[in-house]
Image (tube, rainbow, N blue to C red; front, side):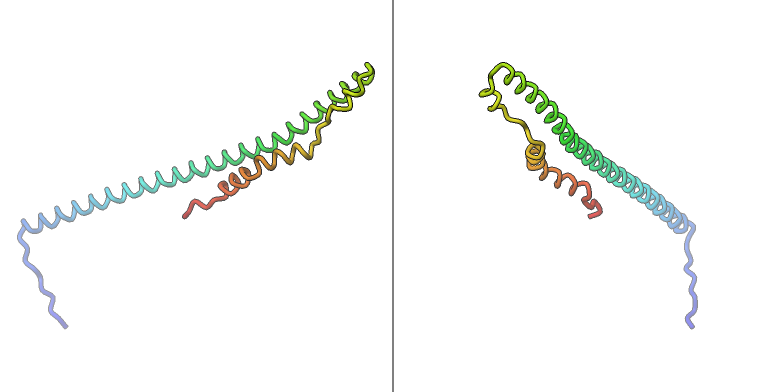
Length: 134
C-alpha cells in the first residue's frame, strides 16, 4: 500500500485556498440563483402563453357560435317581416312585387359562415392544442 504524504502548507497558502473556496461557493450560489430566476421567468412566460392561447381560442369559439345564433335570430326576424310584407302587398294587389321577395334559408347562411370562418376555426383549435414543450 502506498504511503500517505502530507503537504506542508504555509499559513498564507491556507488563507489563499480558503479565500478561493469561498469565492467559488459565492459564484456557485450566484449562478444557482440566476438559473432559478431564469427558470421561473420561462415558466411564467410559458403559463402566460398558455393562458393567451386559451383566451384566444375560447373567444373565437364564443364568437363563432354566437354568429350561428345571430344568424338564426336574423333569419327568423327577416323572414317574419318578409311574410308580413308579402301579406300586406297581396292585400294591396301588388302580388307581382310580392312574388319577387326572397326568403332566407338558414342552411345557406350557416354554410356561408362555416366556409368563411371554418379554416380559421381549424387553425385556432390547432393552435390551442399546440405542444409548447418543443
